[in-house]
Image 1 (cartoon, rainbow over the protein chains, first blue to last red):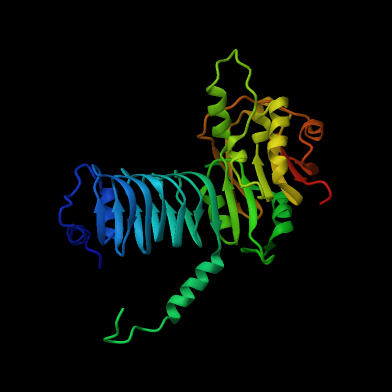
Image 2: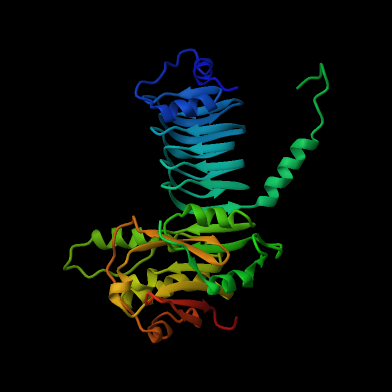
Length: 159
Length: 202
């Protein structure tokens, strides 16, 4: 179902080269993110917004806002920014507040300093975190229920 | 990881704020419970509290104390401060404080300073849990703690920097840590004493 090699190829964004030194874990992250990627040598100062998933191996200072999409901070990623997204996975380092509409995951290599708001939160063994976590499983259930009840878009309708 | 530790006092503490059934915990209070965990982030603790509507503060005061102590030359007396606590919103009030064995790593001036730093965040219904001991060998075991279930702690070797050990008689807490009263204590077979604390008037 998920062909990692194929997925990695389809994530390639014009002008963004595959990043040397990205290990298999990051490659796994990449395969989970069909969207844009910020390579390890890229440094961005400013706000990021958009409507596709984002994988970050570089450095970002500013604000990241992808309300309906997923953000993954790869192992080499260094973020000094607040992040808002649907689901957020952190394998690297984040200094800033995190708002996950559905879920936030800090993996075993993740280091986070900031406040997290998310209906569901997973902290893996070995993860470093300092800050506060606002959790509410009822919000998660409500959001899931809204999603299942959402009517299908009408064919030919405008977005 | 060490064997988990069964704790009826933990059940009592949680029972005051949540509804506990055999395998679940729910918050029917209609408000977000505020929990202070002074230890490092533990996956089990986050997983446990993710079952209920709450705000969990992971303060990791162990690392903060080690960093602050190490930042000063030995001959310079340190005035105890708790910058992490001081950074919290002034109107925040904790329902539950999880001290683990942190109080054993504070000398008397530090204990008094911690009392002052914590006091603004205590309300009439605050309850707290701590491990203490009068045996320094027991106190230097260097464990980190988490919550596995509503009557069970998880324990593992501490990975945060080691801190000096100061053993206290229970009466020291009454004299130097008066923001919370000891309401129950339980002697464990290994010499640790588990204590429950609550705010005055609760």
